[in-house]
Picture 1 (cartoon, rainbow, N blue to C red):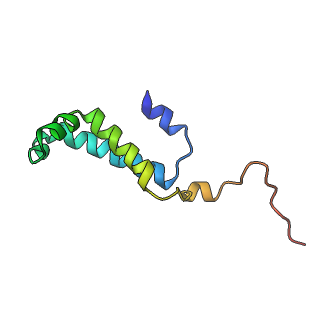
Picture 2: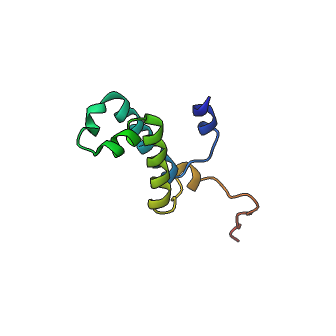
Picture 3: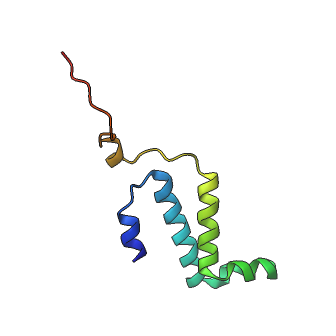
Length: 88
């Protein structure tokens, strides 16, 4: 499933935020379709699909959010190919 694929990937704060926003937007449109009532007809037709809304919000988050700072788990993991220095 898609969640299993996501759980196997290294996550940064940017990717976590992108996933949260896109899932929230998609679920919001699915559960509260009246939220789109103030939009023009063309925009309402585009954003009426939860998949379209979630996908577009994921694209926008990827483009607009600043680069991903490592999560606390990533910050404590040694980088591949880097040998820690030993103090003498």
